[in-house]
Image (cartoon, rainbow over all chains, first blue to last red; front, side, top):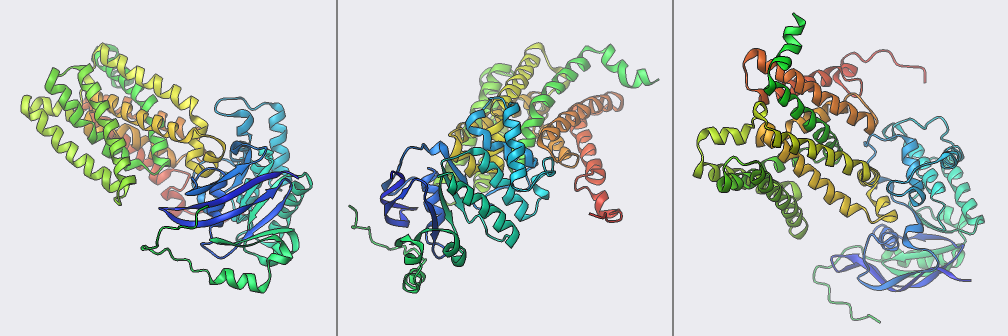
Length: 246
Length: 289
């Protein structure tokens, strides 16, 4: 087994304050990993670090066979400007960036894939709708269609099922299972512990410091969850410089 | 009759034809930039930047008089300096970008007026503040057309990252490094279009033919491509009608053009099918699905 991603004493944060502190470990290729933890535990920060939107304060992230550009990344819904005048079709078409790039054309084969992706998430008939008119669930389906088109070997999902109804969650989980079946590496930031127990074989429990990482059932024990919850969220302005570096 | 009202002024007077060409060029370059400014919630940034180019243009005036090249260069240098400077102060200090821009442009405006007054008369000052759309010489027309051409080319090449940066900046950052250079190119486009607008409409009104058509287009389209086409159309229409009004009514051309754009905007606010007042006042009966 080779690692798709490896964290070497990784510390990520803002303004010198760590949000992810001394994380070590590797994500195997083909892993289906849930990242859980309380709000402010550094889950989103970790994903931003992986895609290179945030520079590590210390340590590093090693990518296996993929480059940053080959990672499919689904940011939190709140990061997207829903009022922008763009159609569902064009939003999904952004998933072709890797092949089309700045000025490349979108050919007939691409259009077939586009239509397939839109159908696969159940949005056929919505192509020309402006994204501002979609419901939260429909928007998330559109973003999953974009991920399908990206055809990425490593897929990062940031709270992909927040505020969705059961039907939508189940449809989107089917896509996640399909990716897992295709040996793609999937990291998902999640809050629904039951869902993680049921569907995700591997879990990283993060509370700024990594609390536990391994088989889901061994990680999500009451003791571990309690100690994650105890972790304080506030930064101390007068925190001392961390001497724990490797 | 109709000929006398609409065609004759342009057919008979060369200065009117030149003004028309100038306005076309401004519309083609400025309106798309205005649409992007609006969608990036930077409408007021455009306004602030229009004031910020004044001291640069004024310095050019101080050195070389009413010279096209000197004033253009000064304007572009001042505009880029303020754009970069305000961005830097916003990132390096706790001041937000809007406050830092406001500080820059207020100082710039006062500085510019002072510099012009050092050498020139009130007529020169009016010339710089309100432009000379009815006295565009060949060199200025070339400059305006050149700016429009460059703007459309740059927008065409950077279209995808530009749109993507507005909709989903994190996604753009995850697939491409184009974000920062494209943002800078866009700011440069804004500055050169404002400098172009400044020659025709003056520093105070240059931004008018950029933002009013953009705001107008918002009420007529839900798709950015159509929005830009409508903005360009609205700007051209405002230019033609404004010039005719100014000719027949004997009012200054620059303000007449911007006022026309304002009327087009007001009509759109009321009648526009996309979120206009009409839908609110006369909702109509609801549909089945």
